[in-house]
Image (cartoon, rainbow, N blue to C red; front, side, top):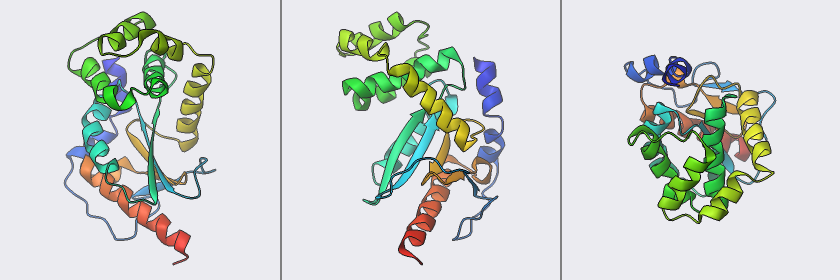
Length: 214
């Protein structure tokens, strides 16, 4: 799994270590972002920002507190949503189901960061659904409700839909950010995670101006 993570994020690492490139006020196609064609479904009353991620990703673990703080202070016309992806790997598909199960039981806000900690700091291996349910119950979650959510008939389709959206956006790894269903932020144009969010802000402003007809 470590080998897979290294492969998926090899393209992101040079950008994170590189010196700041600086960005024009207006983000440029092919530089700060890539067009998503056809666009992903996106709400019309909000400018939606989507983070594609996986609990199994080291970089998503590092990025999580940064993007969570950013998302908590978004203006009213911007919404934020996260999509867990598996890249077709059963181990990561289980991690996607953890996300959706926590969402279904109302425990996501309480245990979202705890899942990252369990995997990346405590080195807990969620190799079976039983191991996941046992861990969740130890954190105060209703074990039966969580187990039912994990095994729900609709769960597989949710995981497949998440992977389909990631494929449609043509992401090369995670974390990846899409804005308004039309723009995929180019990770290679960012010099840090904070810079990645500055580019995201610039693209949000671009969409805002377009919607106002400016």
